Length: 495
Image 1 (cartoon, rainbow, N blue to C red):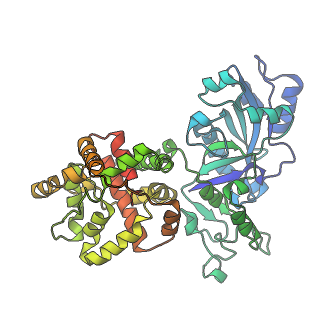
Image 2 (cartoon, rainbow, N blue to C red):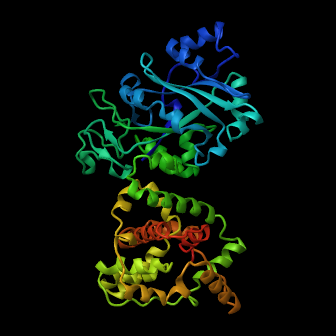
């Protein structure tokens, strides 16, 4: 689960960010005394050991305070002192300075974090950042010039910031409920739940009669960015004014850090996410993130002629339905393994018939029709669900788990020309579609995708199972090309 922590969630009665005047020999005189007063002598000693590249501009930044000293922040998140002491350095290890949490690519960062330290006296995390003050520093740090930030600091103004962090779960301060995603948040007795107070689902930051503030404790945060936010983070998350006003107007409703991150589409860096993932499934997790990245790219290229031409590889007149021998669900992985060995990728209708056919072909077709509009963006939704690792570990469609027979592989060979993602087979199908003057394939619109994504039940489960099958398909190709991955994603958009 990802979270957003706005820096103005705390009140320190001072600016959150300020320039630090370093000379070639360090900090001296009045500048040193000022920083000692604001950040503590030990922090200044650590800062004195830092080295800065030409053009880097040192900035002192107060990141966040501990909940045992300052209470939970205004979004209902708490971070205890002993946790922040252990995790403060993750800012330096994983983080950079970004804008508006656009943190997927370090090349769009505006500085690096040189020092992150928990002050045990002031009970807060303090940073020394090196912002890219000019083109030379930006090039050295493989980023961009922090011109807006520098303009504010040089005028003596503050830089509004917020931080991103990843947690495996959080814990309700009232009832101890552990939640891996926001969907797992507890509810009050009035809402049908068991939380002794207000519940974290709708009651964050509400105050009980004894003064306790409903919040969630974060026992294992990993911080991975500190971003300039030139508009309030709540309003960035809800770009549509109506959505924001509707939520803000709700009586007592508070936007939690997890909800802010969801609505802003925050995803932790892959290097962080896979650090503690079992080695056996790391390739599948990496593949899922790669396919999600391709979704972001292809969703903006559906009007490009190259993409339209490539989509002809999935022309239904060129790709007839696959006929499966009568078999039960238990044999599905074996046939998928046989198909994968020939680079044969099943479309959603055929996949549904294979795994749901035992319930009746008409029902399988109906579920597939409903699930089709959910496929655009499915890889990103799998990642944001917070259950990707679990689902990959328990993926029944990982074809390496089942060994296909010779007869099954011969069956798959019959469909290689019409369904294989081999480059020659794809090129041939695209050419046939064009030569026969077939209309260009159409794509699912964003409106249909949003509408369909609201439908739950069997269709949503089928869409997720199909995505897991595709992740396994890509990961288990012995000779993978960029074209293969692109086709796997594009396939989800063809209607």
